Length: 329
View (cartoon, rainbow, N blue to C red):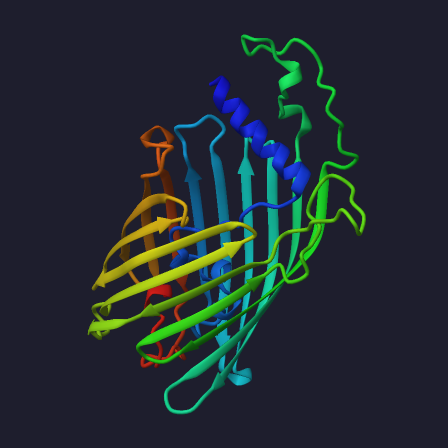
């Protein structure tokens, strides 16, 4: 327990000093498409709502929790998609909290042949909030780990930091495959609690991620049954010195959903991700478990994630959409 407290202490000190942390990437990225790329807005002509909950490393004290809510819809009259996303993180039993509310616009361009291009932009309001009273520092503790004195660490002038965050994304696709690129934090916003000037300002580092996927249709389905398909995919993300690679596949057999992915940080293997769910149309529910295979070991308790997608019935919903985004619906 004492080592765990020092682990989270180090994390908070890094956040306070450098004002930069790696962005959240859900294991069920297909249930939170706007978190991956704003160009995914408008995957359905019907209004689509999504929700994600992630509990990371419950075996360690002060587990990390994340929530996401999303809405997106395509409007054929303006050939555009609109989206809204809310993402919330909590670490250290609420000592550090993050909230982001973003609006997304996507425009679709028809290219030659069966190829199409989606261009998305997002403007988000972000806020970081720090509960200083929940932090413990080394100069407060005795050799036994008990608090014996106040800390002499400098207290930030402001425990709330708000900022504007701008991102963009692109998707090229046809009926079989897609390839996308996302650039987040284009304005590298200052999201730290410690005051900085133009010489010391670090800001939130630019994040880019590239993602590709393929869709193999086993059976198209009909009014009584959902389609069956296989969709392997690969995601590579970089932010500052941090790299992440996710590779695996998503399978839907009528109403049954199966998924298996592997996450790697280039420096070491991180986790094996297994998913199971059902697509009841219009409701899709998926549970996934991240089995930790890094040096942290099984004592972390892995990570649990729930994803829900609900698509409103729409008489104008196209039944023969010529794309490869079935895993996002």
